[in-house]
Length: 273
Ligand code: C2E
Ligand code: MG
Ligand code: MG
Ligand code: MG
Image (tube, rainbow, N blue to C red):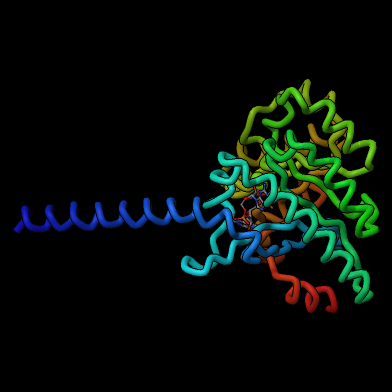
């Protein structure tokens, strides 16, 4: 009996591995035609001012509508796209799509909020800023409508200084994403003009567990303010977390407690309210 069950387990395990492997293989291949076939879409997660409750902006998040696998979240393909270089055309699609959408919102007389775009190091090394500049002028969008989210690790890249200066010349604000999870160095943060620090959601999730966890979040907020950056809490899921963040002096927040990421239509009706 036991031997039989054991064999079955092995059988199912291998089958699951196979399915995973095949899916990974075809994700790699299918990604090549994802843009061409219009399979990429953006969703938007609103951000709110913790003290006034007002909406302040939104983050654009990529979704891949795969004909066979359904909606594939970015964590399942961004890394592959970074490895094979497809992140560059995909990232350019994201920028242009954000510009097209802002243009539609303007044409429809909707209230306009700044949109934050996630950008990985590989994209930034590929003359990303020039592309962004061209799109802003093509769609006639003020640079204050775009914020760029990059990760701590980029600050250590040899191109960081030049790239961040280009953003500054263009008046595009920078947010450090997932702050606290990567390679942080106060000297980098001090040297570079950074307007926002996004506290990683892992800190927000543990924040109510102990005084130590609360103090860690508090010290990130104090440090960010010392660097003259605003703080954005990511992944806020409960009213308790929102209340504590407000008390700790955090500026903005986003997360399921406020709103899930929504598509363009849903955002329209959300903005009308
Ligand atoms: P991120 O920039 O840190 O984005 C936050 C992630 O947390 C998003 O996952 C969002 O859907 C999720 N989230 C929002 N609120 C909550 C919450 O209350 N609880 C929890 N548990 N999660 C929440 P998503 O959309 O799957 O994106 C994952 C990551 O993929 C992003 O992390 C970002 O690093 C990357 N990414 C997304 N879009 C793009 C893109 O256009 N370009 C690039 N290069 N990377 C992207
Ligand atoms: Mg982000
Ligand atoms: Mg991130
Ligand atoms: Mg993050």
